[in-house]
Picture 1 (spheres, one colour):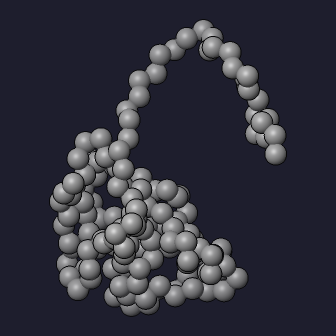
Picture 2 (tube, one colour):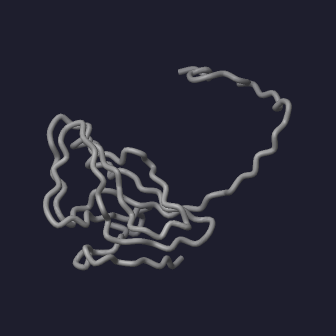
Length: 146
């Protein structure tokens, strides 16, 4: 599948999103920042990627945390997975939060998040007076056991 991508001027020297290995599901995203970006403990920042994409109808891009940064530094995509809709044409930004105990520095060009391209289904709701019964029924959180 080919996806049109527009590299923005402030990312002229950065690689485009790419898979690290042939089995990778996520494309690495690089920070399109001119200088180091310090994220204090408990703080959040919006990080530019330096590109915009044109997804086909029926597809979305999901932005997710990188597992190593999450484990080692408590860095994660705050609204994960973030959704990039097929009709959005602006620069992709990533909302990152630092839940670690120490400040973290994102450096220019650093791989800081990942993007998954996936399909979605558009649903139509049909209002009814009741729903069919199931074994679980209306059981809430934890109702199926430990």
